[in-house]
Each structure stands twice: as C-alpha cells, then as structure tokens.
Image (cartoon, rainbow, N blue to C red):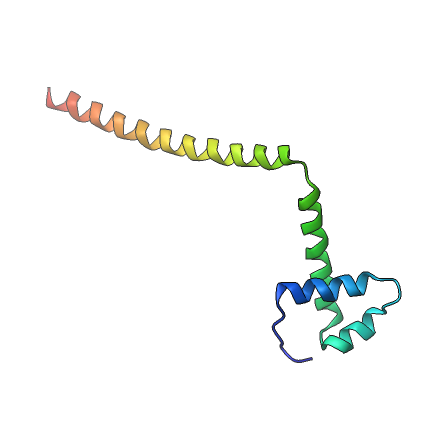
Length: 94
C-alpha cells in the first residue's frame, strides 16, 4: 500500500461506496490502494460525524455554555487573586 493522501470528499466517497451492500471491502481497498484498517478507521470517523450531525442543538448549546462558564470562572479566579494581592499590599503599607 502506498502512502497516499485523500481529500475529505474522496474519503466520504470511498466510505459510502463501501457501505453499499454490493461492494466487498477488500475489493474497494484494492481499487483505492488503501489498507482495510484505513477504510474501517475512516468509516468509524464518518459514523461519529453523522451522530454529531443529528445530535440535538440543545446538547451543542449546553456544551458551549459549559465552556463559557469555565472561561468566566478562570477570569474570576485571576481577578480575585489580583484583588487579594492589592489588599495585602495596601495593608502592609499602613
């Protein structure tokens, strides 16, 4: 097997061709000069992407909000440390 680079579109074409009942995977792999393990890895990624495409938008929004909360908590933590340092410096000066 040669070390070829395939575009995303070509990988989709190969995977969907392999998912047709009348296409033996071994023949498909020979046709495109890829290892069977490569085909099955592409198919796995393809199916995972399909799951994400059909996931509810609410799940995506929840994930975005969770990341936003984490970012804001980090900012608050840094600001709290800065404020405590300023208070400590002011207390030491008195």
